[in-house]
Length: 104
Image 1 (cartoon, rainbow, N blue to C red):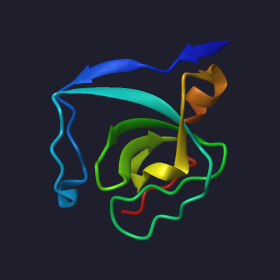
Image 2: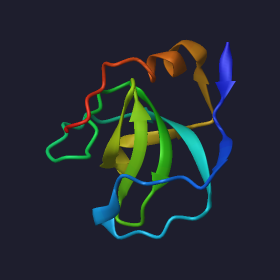
Image 3: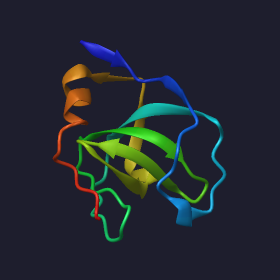
């Protein structure tokens, strides 16, 4: 079973206040598949592994995205994920389990 990846949410808060970005009130969330691993180095960053699926909540003009993966949330390089129109339902449920790490 596949899950449609596009949803619209309003009034999304950001945990990336230091990135100095303007956030639209109507942000579109999407599913991204990780194509390059990323190890979080600072507070608020999100570690990612290849083939993880991330719910991308915001894409900033700085080249960083804010998202959630396996129960954690944080920032990661936008170029490290590839937007997906559909994702396996099993991967979406994995995106909410505690295996991705956000540096706190």
